[in-house]
Length: 315
Ligand SMILES: NC(=O)c1ccc[n+]([C@@H]2O[C@H](COP(=O)([O-])OP(=O)(O)OC[C@H]3O[C@@H](n4cnc5c(N)ncnc54)[C@H](OP(=O)(O)O)[C@@H]3O)[C@@H](O)[C@H]2O)c1
Image (cartoon, rainbow, N blue to C red; front, side, top):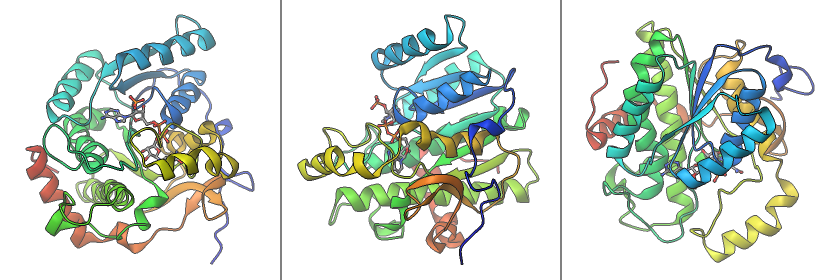
């Protein structure tokens, strides 16, 4: 059944945001693509943004661009974070909490995708699962108390790719020792992020915590996601076909900004562009495959993630 968009024909746009003066947003992977564009939108509305990026050089370039646009007083800063290292995640959380006692939203945006040749993180996890899910899982747990004190939000940036792989978590072979493909392992990592997001939403509601959790996706957006680590075929596709069918990185940022700021959102929903198989167009509620809401898988994934990152949540 076709859904009507509660934000009207144009869908949600940043025009719905009034002032964000006094608010602090934390975005992972904000030097590029949707994360960078989300930073621009939030700064334009008067917020402070703390980027959590892995590259100091790329971050300096991004911050210089933002200073050119918004002036030297633009409230943007950097905490170095490499999601491929649990030690880096722990250090980054400490550094972040030393900089701010307020997090109005943590946007889990950073990701790697389509890694053609299987790689492992420093801690020995298949790289996409390690960076996209396990790194963010630990970061969310370490920042949760601060987010709760701020009555803040956690925004999980998923992907329509979650339902294009095996549509399940390979608990028996989480690292893809068998039959590794770039696509299936990316799909697993995004599904894991989404299952985690919806499980956190349920746990927060059950514990009556003052934290909002939302899950979204940017559709198909022109960003740097497919790069030299992808196969030649995927790189060619991303340079030839994708630019023709994808939307701008700025439009790709709208769902995550919406989930970080908008009041009129519901639980157990998936937000993103709603046209052309939900890859572009007006932002609103998208369809959601039941595999992302599987509560049994969520419990198993939660326990496994706690064990892998060595942190037990009290929620
Ligand atoms: N673009 C699309 O069509 C599309 C479609 C579906 C979902 N998504 C999702 O959208 C989100 C944003 O991606 P994007 O498309 O904007 O791609 P992007 O331009 O490549 O941005 C990804 C960001 O993540 C950072 N990152 C990668 N590995 C990291 C690590 N180990 N530690 C910390 N940061 C790391 C990157 O840093 P570096 O610059 O240092 O690499 C970059 O800042 C991702 O969650 C992605 O899965 C995108």
